[in-house]
Length: 178
Image 1: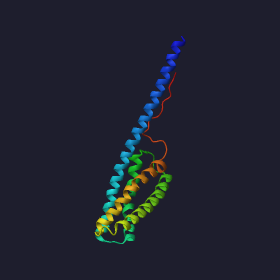
Image 2: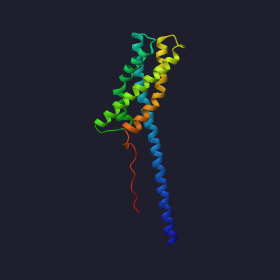
Image 3: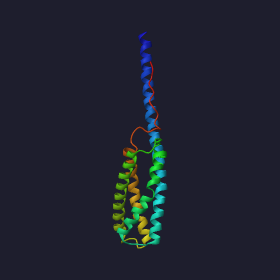
């Protein structure tokens, strides 16, 4: 009989290890798809952002970096509400009503994102100004530098602070009965 019990306990341990490995694999896959959805939402918001920026640059051309920062603030804010709802319901799969906590955290992050985006646009604008004479090209190049760096920061803020917690698309662990 001890041989039988040893085989059963080995099978139980192997099964538990396999379940853990599958859980980790699903979690990695879930995170990958979540990040992909986040990138798609971010892409749509970036297009809206660039559209608003280009309308402003086309209607009111400038080579003044401070005016470019104001344009950036308006353009960045343009996609903020869309970003919140698409990320909440689609990217992070939160089905509950929007809470005050989420709105406050999103507003704080949005303010921080506008600040660092403006800082990056200002730095890139100063660096690129002597190199690019065309105001439209200069404004867009400056904006794209800010977008590239800002995308990574924004995902981290949303993933680990605004919508932190147990995601609804993660599988629940099941108890094993012996």
